[in-house]
Picture (cartoon, rainbow, N blue to C red):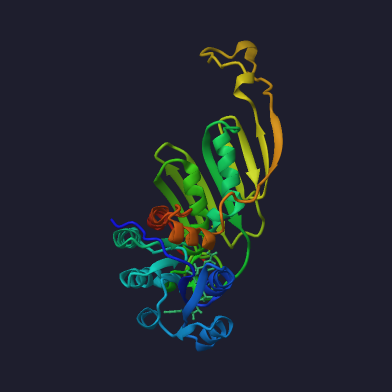
Amino acid sequence: MKSLSPLSTPVRVGILGLGRAGWNLHFEPMRKLAGYQIVAVADPLPERAQEAASLTACQTFSSLDELLAKSNAQLVVVATPTATHYQDCLRVLRAKRHCIVEKPMALTTEEAAELVSLARSHGLGLFVHHNHLHLPTYHHLKSIIDQGMLGTLFSIRVFWGNYARRWDWQTLRKNGGGQLNNTCPHVLSVVLPLLGSPVRRVFADLRNIKDAGDAEDHVHMVLQTESGVTADIVVSSAIALSGPKWMLCGSRGTLISDGEKSKLRFYDGTKVEPLNVIDAAAPGRKYLSETLPWEEKELLASPAPVKPFHENVLDVLTTRVQPIVTPESAAEVVRVMQEVRRAALSKTQK
Ligand SMILES: NC(=O)c1ccc[n+]([C@@H]2O[C@H](COP(=O)([O-])OP(=O)(O)OC[C@H]3O[C@@H](n4cnc5c(N)ncnc54)[C@H](O)[C@@H]3O)[C@@H](O)[C@H]2O)c1
């Protein structure tokens, strides 16, 4: 196990894949950050690489092998289609370069574990782009759970739904497409650390309802942790009307939220009498009832108390602070995704 040796700035960057993620989520923000210098890009579409060179005077290549052989990039961003993340990362790490990889980092638990172990043994940074951990919602929900306002958390419900037909490469299983690989990593990266202990039981239903390819456009998963907390998660582009995006259920209250604005209904446990069970005929043939001292609150998510993804990566590489997204936490997302895939009852239903 080697520790990271700090780099000096600017950190030299190579970017592999200049599509929606490679261009908008990595090339554009990184070229504007003083601590990075984009020295190389690679994409099989030459016009994409040329466009990058016209903005940053970087070297241009058509493949990762060329980029690794001919550039002096210290950090390589893998933003290629999902099915090649594992192989691409493996080559980057074997070439002793630090790596940022788009989510999901790999498609199986074994692949993810291999990448984590290779990075650790070479003393290299492996940064998975779980950008939702850098956004306000996660920190907002976590702080409400930690403050204990809702009592003990027993269930999280998540509904990320819309209705949109899709027909690009992301709708094909052979490319690692589908909602489970595409959108669920975002949800799981946020939910798993809220649950408090590892997921042990999984129910899942994956369906293709209306997209062009053969990959699922509807995911329903129910997860249960070691300590018994459940997460009931729907991520679907086949649902035309929406429910609350987030719901946290605790022993003394409930929260519903769109991720930015939350409504809470809860009571203070010290303001109610303890309950003593009556194990006999209901007195006076009446249902027992009480009026609880409910409080209601609306809370707005504050800006996330952590730096944006690329700034955190730069800090880790240059000053050895801890990464917000550890490779192990990203590998845990892959493990749960694999369990969901295994548990799925039905694959397609058009
Ligand atoms: N974190 C996020 O919010 C987010 C958002 C969008 C996409 N993504 C992820 O990014 C990845 C890419 O998705 P996208 O939407 O950008 O796809 P895209 O189709 O828009 O872009 C993929 C790019 O990679 C290039 N490419 C293909 N094979 C290549 C290879 N072997 N070497 C180099 N370049 C290659 C293509 O020419 C294209 O320019 C996916 O895994 C997806 O899950 C993440």
